[in-house]
Every structure is written in C-alpha cells, then in structure tokens.
Image 1 (cartoon, rainbow, N blue to C red):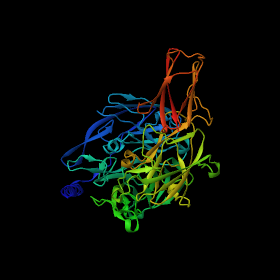
Image 2: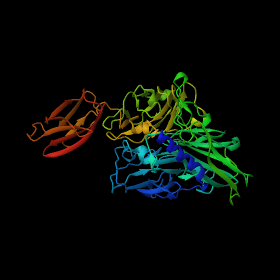
Image 3: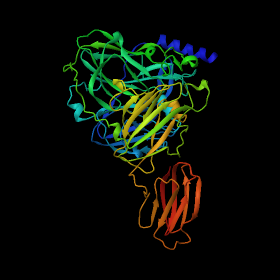
Image 4: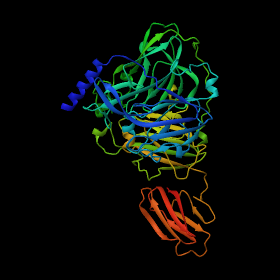
Length: 568
C-alpha cells in the first residue's frame, strides 16, 4: 500500500507541475547510409529529476529515417551501451539476416552493418530493439524511431509531405516509473503519457491539410484516437502503406506496434485549438487501455495508477496557425492499387492459439501466455514454410486480454474477424492485428523474395512484456519445396534433407573414409547431441530430436566444414 501511495503522489505531482511544451520533432536522416549509435543518457520526465534512458544518436528515442523505395541502404548500428542489443526494422521486408531479431546480437562496442534494398511501398514504419527477454526494457528506456518510406505512387498524389512542417511524426507512448523515478518494466504502463518524448505537448499546425503519422509505441497500451469535437479526419494509410481510397473517420484504434497516417483538414481554422485525444472509455473490455479485462463474473479491473485506463484524455494540443506558402487544401479520394491474394490461392493453412500458461486469473494482463502451448525458445523453429508459399493463418485468442499479433518479414490482409470482414481501418496491408478475447482472426499472406535455411523470422504478441515472457515463435522460409534439400553441396559433401524430419543423411566423395573423418552435431545452445566416425553415406536418426536449429561439424579430407540445418 505504501508503494501504491507513493506512485499516486508521483502521478499527482506530474499532472500539476508540468507545463505545456512544444512537440519535439525527431531529426530526420535521409540518403542511403545511416549511422545509428545506441547510447545511454538522461531525460527529464519529473521536475528536478534526471531519469537514466537509452536512445539512438541521442539520449531518448531516435532520428526519423527517410528512405526511397528501390535504394540500397547501409544501416550501421553501433552499440555504445554496456549491454547487448539488437535492432529490428518493424514492418520492413528484408532478409532474415538483416531483420534484427534475437539472433542478430550487437555486442557492446561493436557495429552491425546490414545492407538492404528498400522493397516496401511508401508508408510509416519504425525501428526498435528485439533482444531475447530485453525488448520491453530497451524500448521502454527509449530505443525507438520512425522510418518513412517514399515511392513514386505516393509522390504523384497531392499530399502533405514536408517533414515537420505539414507532415508530422506522432510517436505516442505511456510509460511506468518506480518510486525512484526509474523507468519500470513488467508492469502496466500507466504513469506518464508522452508524444515523441514530449510531456503535455503542443503543435503549431498550419491552417491547411496536415498529415499525422500515428505510431502506437507503448509497451502495453492501445489507443482509440480521435479529435476534440469529433472533428472528422481521413485515413490514408495503415501498417503497410497507402490504402486504395481515403476514408472519413472520427475514431481509429491502434494497438502497440500499429501505425496509421491520417489527414486533418485545418483550412479556415486559424486561431482555433484542437486536441488529439484518446477515447479510452470507448475501448472494449479486454484491451489494455480499457477499464477491465474479462467478461461476466470474470471481469477484473486493470491497475489504474494515473486514471488512464478506460478514460478519455488529451494526447496533444494543436494550435492552428497561419498556412504555409504552398498549402495542401484538398484530399485525394483514390490512393494506391492493392491486390489481396484470394483465399482460394492459399497453399497452406495454419492455426495459432493464444492461451494462458498458468490457469490463474491474477495473471490476466501480465501473463505468461503461450502460442500453441509453446513458449519461445531460440533453439526451436516453430514453423517451416517455403518461398512463394501463400498461407492463411487463423489466430484464436483463448485469454481474457487482447493481444496485438505481429509477423516479421511479410505483410498480410485480414480476411475476417469471427467470420465478418474487417472494419475499414483494418483493411489494406497489415503487419499487426489486435485479436480480442474469444475472437478468431484469419489473414492471408505470402512469403516472397527472401529464403534462409537456418535464420528465422519472428511472430509474437506486441505487448512487450508478453513477448519477453515467451509469447513468441520462429519461422524459417526455405528456398523451395523440394523434399530433399541439401544444406550444402561442394566437392566433398552433401547433407540432406533440410529441414530434417525423421533422419539426416550426410554423403561424401570418400568411398573409404579416413580414420580422422568425423561427424559431431550440436543443438542451438551448443550441447552435443551426436558424434560418430563419418561414413561415406551416413544417416542420423532425428525422429526424437526437438524441432530447432542444429549445427553439424564435419571433418572430411582433413577439412572441417560447419553447416547448420533445421529439424522440424
């Protein structure tokens, strides 16, 4: 009780002591080479206190990366922290080795240097760490930034696109703090609201059509965004870029990781004040950000330190000022051409169920939760698919809380929610979908362009504590659908099939093996699972091995060959 009272005192002090501040606009970087340094720093969230933080090229958050479609991009990420980190390019379609998942660890004092070709359409994406068990901590402490992709289709439209003038990044976050004003994790983020790291922000917005790139960047909280006076706005893009047409809305719901680009027509409103608001009272039960989880007799209130859950509150003040010299004053109706894959073209269907790991209602919000009764294990590959596979994934939520489900590498189109077509703001290309308690969501996707026999991508809940606590899985995209796929083929050796199911075969050109020829196999954590003298045609039973990534160390002709393969 003493700790709760102390937190309440903190919350009251914050709500009364902070004055309004101009919205911080993160600096923009453009070109084809981006030098990003992950570093520690401090940030003033509470009057008189400097809170330790992390940031990219600064103390908190990171610069906005502006990239043109088709460019070859060099991303140099230097880790100046005393701990390991990673960097995931959320929403970008990149090779598995460049995705920045838990496998791509950046050690202190080192630089990770992936090179990618920008294949995404124009849209709003973002970057953040994705280390095993570290995502919540490092994102909460400040490592996050926006990515804006431009392409010829978007450039041909009459849209606001001058960064920081009529086109604004809006990274909305709530964070939790402990009694020492330290950023807290593994708890419900209900202490402070900020936009671009700015507390109680205001934005001087010109009296014309302006573009707000909304990013729900909280660890836990979902938002129901709208404007004061129910001022209508136009939705033009969501996670994967432009929609086919602009749509008039007064509300849009975004869960952690989701993005939306909205146009607000402020023409003729010079001198007026408008507020971007969160209508938390309109969020259905079970979404973190609403008042309660569960239904019927199982309703449990969310912890509500600063009265944010289930409440309506201002996110940002917009002061309407004079228009710019060349204002955009109209909004196009037609935007981009979208081509969803018909459900009839699916090669594979898969089901993913979300379940509590512990049957205890006290864990309703914080978990742990599982996907298909399995917690994340870096050594396990949960799904093996193939290049150019079109798949329908069915998501079933058997918990009392809504989970935002995110898939790396690909975008998807939502087919239906409980058999009903999705609402307009959920149409178009998505990489996150919020699955409500008890709901079933189906989406269709296609695994294109990139295959890697041993490096996985992730799928997971984007409530960061859930992700860190094991609500995540891995999938590998294989190069083709051949039943027997060699891991490697050179003058000395072949190793197949990959993935292996019941057995793995190694063949060599040596009809009479040397006494020094040997085969040793290790699992993903380095434990030896098999060792024997190598034969000309050597078969190893894998039928009782857990699914995952394995490494074969093969000594043949006085040469040591190291190859990874998958057991499914």
